Image (cartoon, rainbow over all chains, first blue to last red; front, side):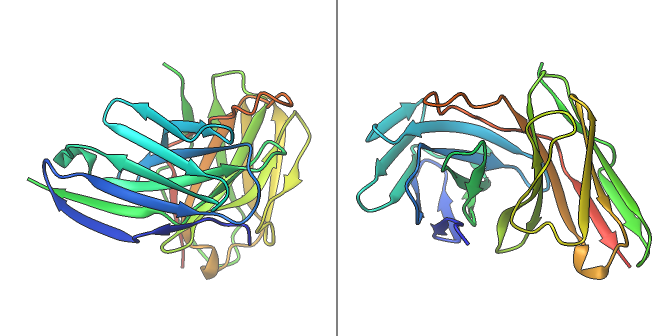
Length: 110
Length: 117
């Protein structure tokens, strides 16, 4: 399987702390995307980073990409209880499809 | 507001029944996808379609078929439901990715939680 691996599988922090999630993948990519899933719902796109980019920011989100190590990280700064969700990386390897990682469950406690 | 809708949020079926899951998108997207999501396994692609009447197998097509008669609608069919098909099913859509553009954000429906007894 080309599926990406994420770690940690689960992360529990307090409000105001930063949350970092990591994604590793196996094949070359065109871009890498991060999605969020609230409990029992569909996924929502958060941010995309292209293979020729190393870092990207969007609000409280910061994504890095290291294509030599085939890895990416998602940093959420100053976490809020509303950030509680599962987060998935997804690799665009071409051919119209995405390959999703296994996900990180984030719990932010007030 | 862009939208992907799925016909049911929860569905309970018996082993051996034929099951239809419907997905409709209003964004004029060319691509539509069906995934299943199981704990610890993330999302796995069952089938996808990049045009009307076109379909391609994903990673786990066994036991499933699909139909795309209209651009906005993509149906997933379980010919004879089995207990190991109990899962969350997610539909998604995206624009057809032009070569070299590489931007294909997917928009997801709310999911259908299917239980096969």
